[in-house]
Amino acid sequence: MSTATPVPDAAPALDADFGWALRALTTAFRERAGDAVSTVPGGPRGFLVLTALREGPPESQLALARTLGFDKTVLTYLLDGLEERALVSRTPDPADRRARRIVVTPRGRRLLTTVQRRMTAAECDLLSALEPAEAQHFRAMLARIAATVRSDGICDGS
Amino acid sequence: MSTATPVPDAAPALDADFGWALRALTTAFRERAGDAVSTVPGGPRGFLVLTALREGPPESQLALARTLGFDKTVLTYLLDGLEERALVSRTPDPADRRARRIVVTPRGRRLLTTVQRRMTAAECDLLSALEPAEAQHFRAMLARIAATVRSDGICDGS
DNA sequence: TATTGTTATACTCTATAACTATA
DNA sequence: TATAGTTATAGAGTATAACAATA
Image (cartoon, rainbow over all chains, first blue to last red; front, side, top):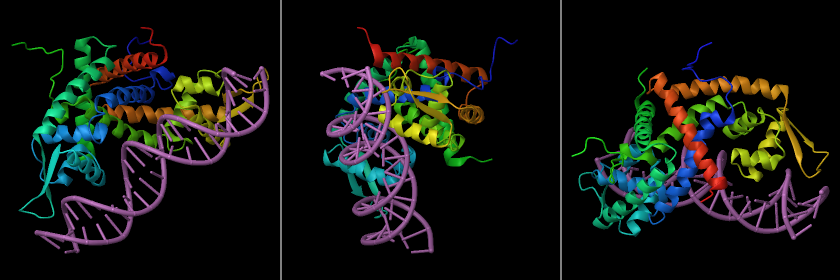
């Protein structure tokens, strides 16, 4: 009998099921984050658009869509909503008149700061089952996994 | 200057954003799990129904729905699909003729075993960014969080 | 001919309300 | 009256196809 089992049991109970736990986490996150981002047009996805734009203007809407992992058609109406409330500005790129330059407005930055604070609080609440150091570890592992699966989707070599 | 920051930065980049990482993980999981559960009527949710039933027949459909965190209306057509392929049986409870006794058939158990094996493989692939021991730690933390947020939703005392 | 962005459409998942049959 | 289950419907989120403008 081995006491440590690196490979998970082939027939776990519901509570031990990865998919079930992931589903429970995302559901709870949606609920709590939903309140936090209720003031952002487009909700959680609008928030991610602002977050991505904060790092600098993308080459085009398409480049932004790829960064976020969103469909380009989704981005169109997400940006419609954000532009309507003057949180981003959308101007034709003089160099390539098919593309649009998207930039966050000062107002957009201010909203993002406020909402990010609320999001952080919601996340801490969500992870309150873990000790602070554990929660940081969980976040770090999650980020590593996300980076891997994303790059897999984009450029899985072999 | 502190080298350890238990509280996350208030303005993280996209790659460090919890919601973005969670979204990337669930998207990748859906893709991979989708293949694994493609033979189960109702897909990922049908699989969870079978998993929950494997632990024993529930009091009623409603009790099963609460265990899974599904809406009762969803469970109706999920069970329709599973019953149609003889993976579960649905018989009126003699004691309370409003309620139905749901049990997994031998065929349902066999399918579950096969699919669970595929699901485990898909999960291991998904978590391949982590060392096996780390992956187990991640699973354990995820299960703890899920248990907490679930019980919060059902019976938050104070 | 290929690409950016838009519109229209459909499909899945989820949530709500209204109904039936039992208790 | 309250509960178990069903049906119908509407709303998000997502993906696809077709289109206009530009390269």
